[in-house]
Length: 503
Image 1 (cartoon, rainbow, N blue to C red):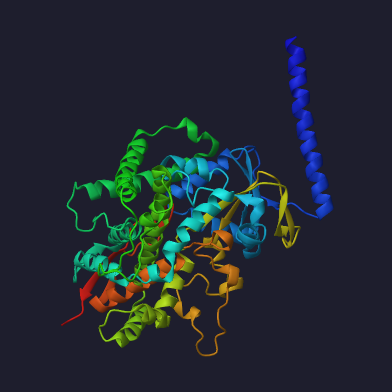
Image 2 (image 1 turned 60 degrees about the horizontal axis):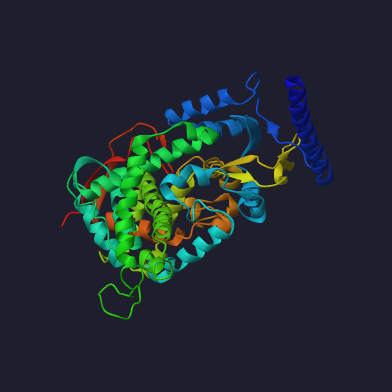
């Protein structure tokens, strides 16, 4: 009897595999699709050795660079098996465009939902389909131009930032200060009041919130890497951190639900009609948990993306005095006045400096999607790698913005160099129009809603820093190494020395 049951089971498995293989063969034949070039994984059937190698590179802070080097050897699109799952890795802009836009309906977030759910819940960055569309519609109004131009609020937190930066030439880690600054700025914009971390003493509630927030999101990256095995790993500290952050945000939510949402302006007088995101959500929703989830989803992006960008900008400025000097020449035109929103838009070199930092150090340098059906990518098949590629249902597609942003085909022979001038049409140089080759804020239907807000805030901070400090010097000559959380940062921080403008 046992042998009969075993025979029936094995027959069913073989039949299912055979049916799937026939389905794949027919789909490929009908659509004329080839397979992506496979990575050499001899003896590594389930991809465990590949996983270990990737983990080693991550610990060394070199995973992004190793991927870039691999594409130079194997081409921009390859296939492999990782922990038993088929995946395709690509840095081809046409393939990334297909995944994010033209074939958007063929892909979803895959396992990100389950990996991030204990901390972020269900929100704009962890949902697909109608739920994602609803979240996006709720959040979009809070990021209108009126919200983007909240320069007085930014200035308040910039003053706190500047007060923490020594101007006597002593060494300071700007990266940590930028993450502190954006936590206050983001919570002020989202909750209506900042957590006040920049000026809080050690051991304060604000510091505990910040530490719990950072530690919780760091473990999300671990959960994502574990894939289907994440359920086998329980982390008590992660659970405590989630509870602390949830409780803190829940207090803000309860207060908002207990009052009617009221428009307010910066001076407290009626007329300007400004809503923070919490008030906006509380005026249209009654589910406190869902409001908290949406807030945490946006807080993660609003805080970390801008801090990552500012850190990259000053990491490079400290090593390129020529760029600092040219920035000074542009900023001095403000004659010491705080920049208005319109003035920010006129600062072409400031924007070029931001773009170059976003190109070389995109805040989200890699991402994944999961195919929800048999589909294809435009390029990567055949000997020349230019033929359409078959993507089976369930395949993970990993795409690297980091590697794409270093493409010599898009950015020229000096693609690995830091040169903000590439974004300006100067002399005989052709204007740079990278299109889908420049995606620091993603693209397609899921393009970052806070893109303009992040650029406005970053530009404002850069200008105010140049109005305050005359010089910046690097105090750490080690080469840049990655620290990969949910956003990119420098493994060694941004160790610099600044000196105040005289007078």
